[in-house]
Image (cartoon, rainbow, N blue to C red):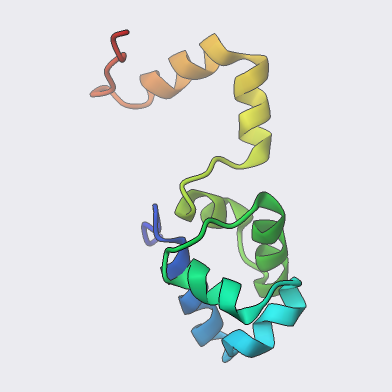
Length: 104
């Protein structure tokens, strides 16, 4: 799987191009203006969680990949972290032997 971390605009553009959908055609299906989509693709704006869901539904792709490409955590993971913050941090740090605690 390609690493799209921090590259939401590139991923959105690729999804559009792979599916043969122009930016002006896609915009109304997502309930936004094409100039906003252009800003997203050029990294000048950050998508809302709701827009990420609509894009995932439109293209039939994994919303988690879209969230991560926008440097966001999927909302269900945010909820887990809020409910069990210490356990979540321990688990995540255990997955990476090079992870270091931040000093305050």
